[in-house]
Image 1 (tube, rainbow over the protein chains, first blue to last red):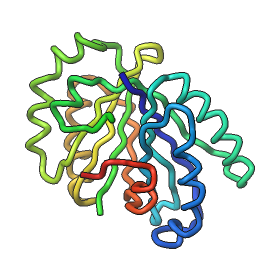
Image 2: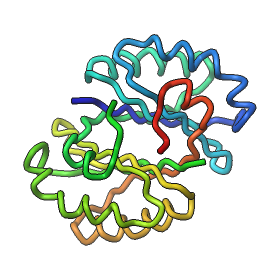
Image 3: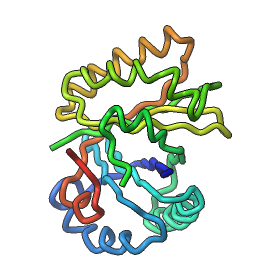
Length: 101
Length: 101
C-alpha cells in the first residue's frame, strides 16, 4: 500500500532548467524524508504554478511531510497551497502500468 | 518530456476491492487512450474523494483526455472535477526517483 500526496501552488518562477539549478539541493534533501518513495516535480509556466506528486509508504509520512512542506513554502512567501492525500489503488494502478515503488 | 494530469472529485464509492471490481474494465480501456504512459488510481474513503494521477507523452494528449474524461464523469453524475495539467521537470524528478516512463 502506498499514498499519493499531490501539491500545487502559485509560482512565479524559475521554471525549466533554471528551476533545476535553483532546487537541486532541495530535491536531494527530499530523498531523506521519512517514507518517501519518489517525487515527480511539476511546473506550468503558462499558469504560473508548480508543485509535486509524491509517493509515500504510509499516510502518516505524507501528512508529516505536508505539514513541514507547507511551512517551508510559507517561509518562501507561498500561501495558497493546494494539497490532497490519497491512497493509491494497487490493482487498478497495475492495470494502467503505474509505478508504486 | 512528459505531462502530469491530476484529477480528483467527490466520490461516494465504491472504494478498495469493490472499486477494483467496478472499474477494471474502464482501466483496461484507459490503456488505449492516445499518449497515456501510466495512471495511478487514487481514493480517499474518509473524505469521499477519488481521482487519478496520469502521465501523458504530450500536453495535447492530456488535454484531449481530460475533456473526454470530464464529460464521462458528468455522465456518471460527477460535476465538481478538479483537474490540472503540468509539465514534469525531468532532472529534478530524476533526483527523487520519479518514474516518467
